[in-house]
Length: 347
Image (cartoon, rainbow, N blue to C red):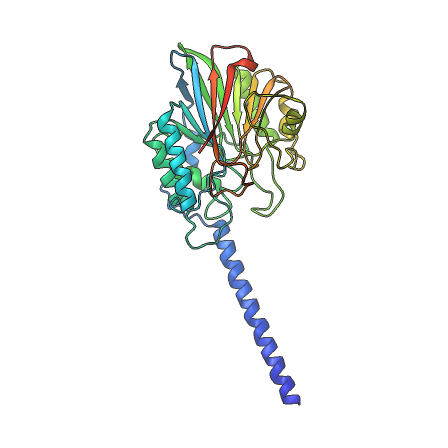
């Protein structure tokens, strides 16, 4: 009887030891994937601090057209869903004229341990798709982009190899991308576009959502004051003011609105809203993140616009299909309410 008990105890100890070994190996692998830059990029993220100011010219029509792409959650660029997304993006760009493409976060999937997940291959295929149109494009990091196989800084450094990719940042400011793009018309500065990093999670991939910090808001306000023109702001995760805009704002005609998730679900995300207040020159805040939510409302003297997911690989409600957002800015119009037009394009 004692021999049987000893044998059983040894078996249990052996099983526990194997489980512990497996747990240690898996945990080590996960930590490696969390912190490993697999981009193979030859570029240094530090070069971003030396980037020259970006200025783009608006043609004689006075209309500057932005194509906003967000939450594509590319897996590897070649799977069926990714291919459908890329086909849609290709079709939309080929059939229209755009002056700037804003990739508004979560271009690639987040924490994914599948063997065929390859976010840098996906970035390559996406970049090659847009590069052939010779359109400037930029990237506002999302909460998922830098969760695994490299940080947002690694992604941006990797994107620097592409001719039409534009980026910039300021030392001492939180986030991996804080960029102003000046729009000139007839030789005069007439509009600003700000692209910002709304950060990710306070514990990488699993913690609570982070939010735009005071120094980023100050960077934005300083830039807006310096330019003294209407400014459109793009970042990934919405702020709490979006809920007020959805509930109390004037909905933009023809824009499909949906509220599958609360717009104010990011805890303590009020720093940005309080900082910008009723600044008259901040005329548009455009976000993404909530895959099945859509809104475009004029509230407190500006537009609050949020786009649903643009990719077939993104998880969302079936009744909200992937779409891109076309934003046209009439830089000759001084009226904030009428200077913009918005169009959702299903892909």
